[in-house]
Length: 293
Image 1: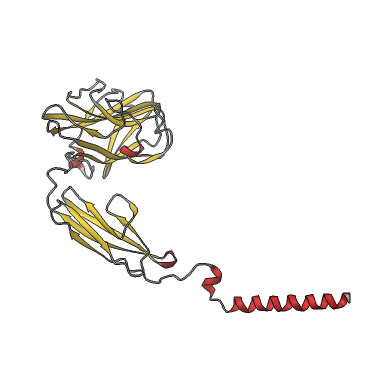
Image 2 (image 1 turned 60 degrees about the vertical axis):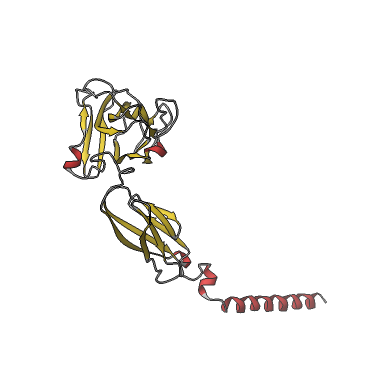
């Protein structure tokens, strides 16, 4: 009787194992792996259409067949977007627009097209001259306010960016340029800012004041935004728009990159930076913008 029970159980296990083996052998390899089907060639093509009635605004429309997600790069890095995007390019120039199509199985393919913007938007165009730091002509648009005669803190220009380096010891340096503004009109200020390392007792401040900057005089007229280790940012490596990664309150006591002025005329955009224990990699800026809203 005992032998009989064992025999029946062995037969049951044998047939159960054989059934599972047969079932698995009938499945395609990709089902066993759990990867699903993968498209060999994902079509990343897209069209660009000017939006009627909107200045320097364009509709980007990807083809949707076998595409499950879209990523875009309009010059500021890749971001996840929709298959139809509306973008604004307020400044004259040539822009490379890249669409990255994501297909089944995570396969990706990219297509790049150019948009040529012939005229800047008169309301939203960038009022900063040389804000891209592209070349010597751009660099020449900026003046330096010598705040550390020893040269311990200094702005250095390279193609595409400007970096302030300092040996610390509370050394600081500022760069600036004049900009014409209109009374009671709102403007936004922003820039890309980054550092590979954090700092201690360090500030990075942006001003938009009517006072003319002078060497040896610490600028304090109408602080707009910035970074400050005392306020909790720039203590570790950072990268992004200053309006996003910054933590410094403006002259009104709030965090905002929007400014307006009580009179029409000339103001000075001043970027002042320094500190005690300064990041060894320096703080780098690019794409400085001052735009009407």
